[in-house]
Image (cartoon, rainbow, N blue to C red):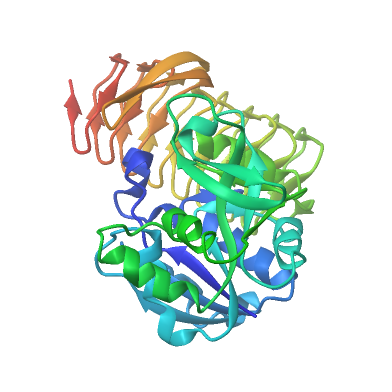
Length: 396
């Protein structure tokens, strides 16, 4: 059985983290979200894949190539205009025959969830999960174990079982997709609902991991989930006086300076320099070539590749994009926040700073909880940041 992996979208709600990367390539646990999806499929014995790509597709294609390094055989289909998920699937039609799986490349999914979907038997079926925020998704209404309706982002509560965007289908769905396209409807949930009027569509609950990152702070939840499975590796150089507790993965060429304290699960990439006297606490990942200065704290945070953090900084529940530079004593502490994404306000229980790629933040700056610093933004010393600094913005 082949799997179609939808990976064409930009992920605009991810703000400063998709300026040069598609959403599927944002790292959690030091690997792109899409890599976790590909490896989960391979682990479940699904090796044949069609990746539907679009926005910044060269980033995906150069990383995965033909899939050999990941134990997969990967073909590509290009969606030049991102009209919707059904339109995306239609682009892969010429590479499919009979039954196939469909998964979203920006949703974390594990082997168990894929196994549950495959075990549902002959297509068609949709993987569903319980959600505490069903109004952000398509809510699936059931008739027994069959799909009766899919209500997209309901304003009033209608249930808490949501469509995960993972399906087992066959090529009969394409006729339905083409009919809906003539009506200007390009989304897969509409196609599944229309399909359910012609034949039964199973709703399969999963006991596995499924998690979506709709907004930048959601990346922290995905990162923590991935790090539950981190393997203990101690490469590089560990100086005397370093304390490591729990599972920690250290990449080649990384140096932990004296007095540094790490509480796992933590993943640290290759070529990093940490400390001296730095502290890294659980559920944190640091990419390759990260510099973390002395007396700095990283707690439940993501630092992507090539991040440079000066001495005496504090980062809690924060996401820092690749190539960002934080000078001395920058503070991004966790707290409750009201954050605005694409004109919509969100109440976030706990978040720090969300700092885009190649941003530079001056010494002594305080990044208020939920503040979003755009890619390539420049912030002077001793500033206090709140709200959103646009990509390329300047704060003196």
